[in-house]
Length: 617
Image 1: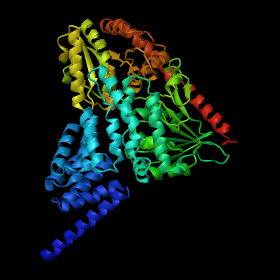
Image 2 (image 1 turned 90 degrees about the vertical axis):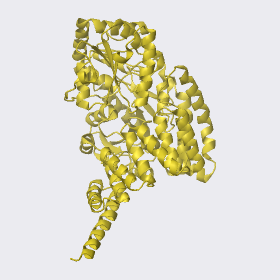
Image 3 (image 1 turned 120 degrees about the horizontal axis):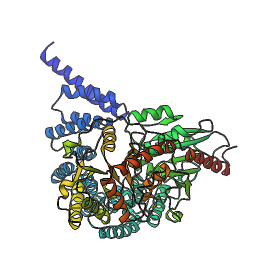
Image 4 (image 1 turned 60 degrees about the horizontal axis):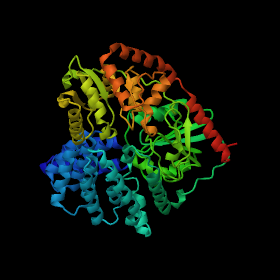
């Protein structure tokens, strides 16, 4: 074949794969798209857009490392390719490399200083890094450049709730600023105009007040304001979803579980798998709606375990219609506040009865939620006043929690500088849970146990880890401990098996105060690890205490700061005490795993409510 013909054939094949791969991706056929796009890149390795397209497909699949490599190569081939820089920034953020992501976005803004989407991405990145003032400025700039950018207006308000505080007084300042901005938000969204209302509805859920709950205060008033605004915004745009559907009288009860966490995640472990395994399937049909594209072995379990399982549909209107068409009597949200699409769906009416569990343990403020499913052991007296929803205190922990075996994988703690004689205090909570006022608890334990080493898990931001290090140095100094940097170790994120090994090797689990461990505590007690906890304040500060009470292992349950320190110090010095706590913990596990009272009580609640509403014979 002549050389020209060969060139034309190669070009023709490339164009076929280039266009075909993009079409496959649009249709959601991600694996096929990757095969075709890889072939296109092999034919034209110097084609920047082909590299970008392959990166997008790999990103959709969740192969973030390969996606980043292709975006970087696309940028090298064509530095002006703005979509690659923004996509790379998003991937880097997901990998915990937000600092690198900021650098790429700033490079884009150097070329195009009026790029509204780049300013919004910069705001998102800076918000996650805890740089609230800079994040607000970036979101504000994005909104000024694009008046229809409702997402940036939401972002500018939510960025006032930082993920971390250097001083306790910063909390009051952040809360006051957020309160003022939230009150002004509806006016800035221009909800009184059709365009403004439409833009706000399309943007709602892009940024949520997730970090409000970490301030350790009752959020009812603020969440009620936010929830009423959300419901109003979506009702203006989508009046067809503003009222509950009328269903024919029929049975069994159809229960829709709506979540972005049909995957290996805390929400799956605590709530969804127990509902899937525990509901009486003669009386209840279980429908699952996965609001994210992430998929793993757990997703496969859900496909088989639910009577109907819907995934891959991430368009709000399409998914809302799909759920409504399936006519559920009840919608269960395991959480509201952690997943954007779930939050939008929770602000409309999908079923006659809609409930939220304590996956994000704060009131939603949404008038569309008819019950908050909590735990009798976790809720303090008078807790009803902290919720806009009617509070339902289910027995025990409020969840059906079967045993969750996780095979251990090797974890060499010596490689992280841990010595063989160190007493290991596991501090494994999300760093936002550690408020400045409680640093002295750790420092006092360090002063009393010279061989104590405190193991934290590095967040997806080294900046936040460094800020906690700086806070702990000050606290340790106040306690007369001069080697804070040696005594505090930050471990990387660990695989489930290596994390199980960490729980097995640790000596003591130090619970965070104000917002205690839930899933992390359950995984610790599964290994018999002694848990020191001080139940205080709202329900979210009482998870671990409830777990220990359910186990009948309450010797490490404190009622004051001094008692918390005393118990932790005794565990550090007294191996016999540690062993006795471990034995009591392990003895209680069968009763905890076998407690079906929460799911049976939930079944009766749903049946009574559906019958009361006249939807079931």
